[in-house]
Length: 65
Image 1 (cartoon, rainbow, N blue to C red):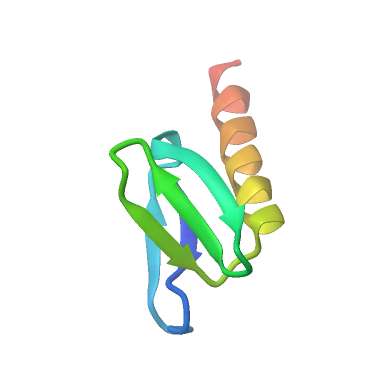
Image 2 (cartoon, one colour):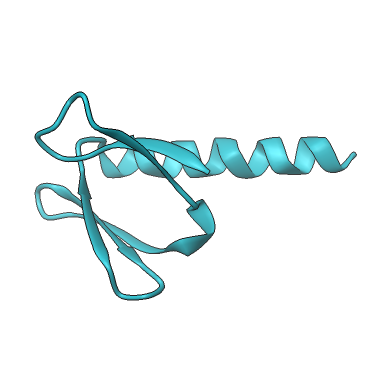
């Protein structure tokens, strides 16, 4: 799970299951498309979303050891 902020709503954070992410695009806003086709627009950059997903996955693997 990763914490993100809805676009143009600095105080509205939400948590997203990173396993549901299909694509992340900057158009120029960051649009996340989920595996069910739903699209989310977030304040974070594409690079930041990718970094958070990578950090999440690393944490999972660390806990498996």
